[in-house]
Length: 180
Length: 180
Image (cartoon, rainbow over all chains, first blue to last red):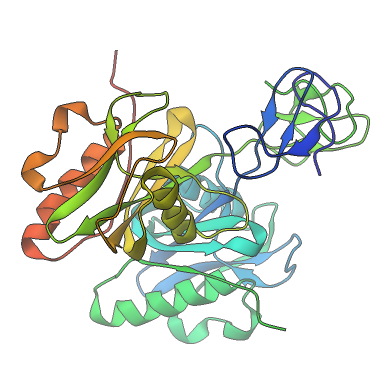
């Protein structure tokens, strides 16, 4: 929760600015408005032959579960550059991006995932600081019951399915929490 | 530039936090880190028969030039919901999203554009507060020299081209400033 103006340090009020339709953190002292917007997570499916690189998470959430290399996109980089960087950071993996593959909005946590298909350039991979373990798996070896996130499961399901025909169809969709 | 902690109001220092690799606005008083990440702009190509809805901008940047309805994605919504909302806000247009069509990263302004194909449900459109004028145009009527943004031109070029075959191919890419 934003309480102070990050430009002048005064207390903010939460109200709808003139001409806007949503409440924002507004500074009445200097006029700064602090907007909060969805964050982008970029990642890839690094493939080498019939195997895919996956990473066991060394951080929360979902510590100890398996994921595809992915992380928050940074200012000043493109989505594909971010996906390359994350593969390097999480698995010391050198990848070459092929195409955008899946895009999932997750409204309840205000995140959008953008996952690319990528060529893993060599087998020389090892865990980065955010991974306990990294490994190359065939379709039959994917630990479906130990995947960290719905977006990982869906992306891998589509990927394995599309690989049978050789036609990779980009997909977008929303991921919502299970109904209670 | 972030100068103060928006959680406790103390001055921040700009440094690389432990375990991170980029400088952030760090509060040494309460430990809050203010991250700044790319923003998502969501929009659509609203089509009705052989015509496309375009909007003349009533705001900077690119006041008076033509664009597709698009704007910043908000927390708590999906990308496609945001695209529907923007069409309503900018052109009082009711649209139904078909599929994700173009995704452009613009690293030098830290934005990612996500443009959808959409069905415009009826001709009953009118300018919202951010538009001077809205209109339905055929391919031959697109004001190519008065388009507001590169992403609009590219999206419309692909759209017009793909419409000839009826096969709409999603595209992603980066938009960089012209070399000086």
